[in-house]
View 1 (cartoon, rainbow, N blue to C red):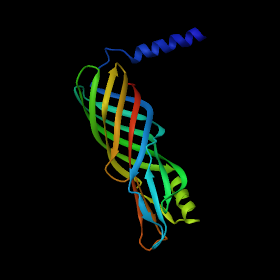
View 2 (view 1 turned 90 degrees about the vertical axis):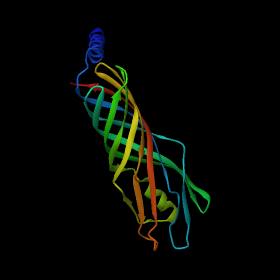
View 3 (view 1 turned 90 degrees about the horizontal axis):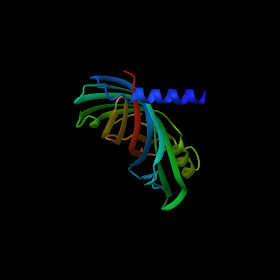
View 4 (view 1 turned 60 degrees about the vertical axis):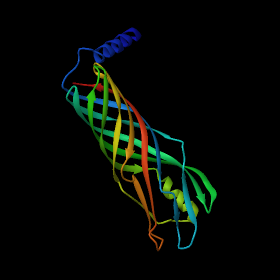
Length: 222
């Protein structure tokens, strides 16, 4: 049985890495990891003339999964739309009136990302691509609201906004037959979240943008 499994894996790898595979259209699956962070506006006041609440951007990045499907149209010049489930996040140091309050906040989101990349193949195996992306937030772990509650001593009256954000991806790729490896950087044009404080008379807002490094492995089905 062990020898059969090894043989099956070798056949699969040989099939995937078939160097003669070079169609003008590809459809496949891909999966990999994100190393993400969130940064942006920091200072705000939670009550009229009240407590200064400050999020300091933290250099630590959050590790998350990404995976989905891709389409590629063209050879030397190509368009590659994708639909991906993507886990993103970031970490903050939280301060109240200049004093560290509850340490690091680890914020996590699950998103549906739809990048549309425009690329050029410089050599037979090497690609460069860049393009816009839309990101729809599906869920979050609630750490932002928990942090606000810890500072205010109760319900902070926060409301998450901006479920849909727009950004871009840029990077390089390598093809070996049906297998592909992509490494990209992702940034945002718009805030991935805004928080409205309903219990303040000044309607304070808190906005953040995301950035990440992404590495994925893809397999072209046809």
